[in-house]
Amino acid sequence: MMQFIIGIILLCIGLTITTVGTFMTKDGWLRWHNKKEDALSVSVKSESQSGGITANQVTINNPTINVDSRRRISVSLKNQLIEDFKSIGNTPITISITSSDSEAFQYAQDIIAVLNEAGCKIGAKERVFFNPEYPGLNVKIANEEISKDADILLKAVQKLDSDAVIIKDKRFGKGYLALIVGSKRR
Image 1 (cartoon, one colour):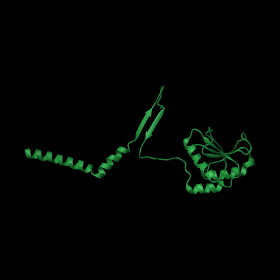
Image 2 (image 1 turned 90 degrees about the horizontal axis):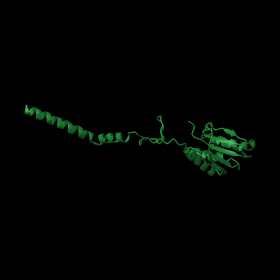
Image 3 (image 1 turned 180 degrees about the vertical axis):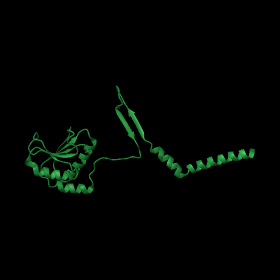
């Protein structure tokens, strides 16, 4: 009977060592380690909250997901745009950027670099607030005097944002041509 009990104990010890040994092999260890890194980290911070479930700051972090949703200009499109922008006359282009959107600001910098490379005149660079009815990219003119340059700019910009349109606004001076860089269209 004593031999039977010792045999069962040794069997249990053997199974435990085998299981741990298998788990600790490289593949088992990496699987366990990667699961640990894939864990979603969420933190919520709220200050002066008077009720409800709103929070002043919510941070969600998953180190294995890296999604860059920023609009970008490919090299081939950049070369096409440079050729298109070279046709624009001497009309200075004002760049208007949605002030609260850092992605729009960075995208505007990319577009300004392409305009500069094409030899276009850049007028003012302004950060302004826009109505949500103008997301994405749009061209703004004050009157028809510069319609040829506005059409060239619009056709080029439509390669970046097919929904871009010309917005006429007579509040601005003669020859006013602007590129509005708004928030990314949803």
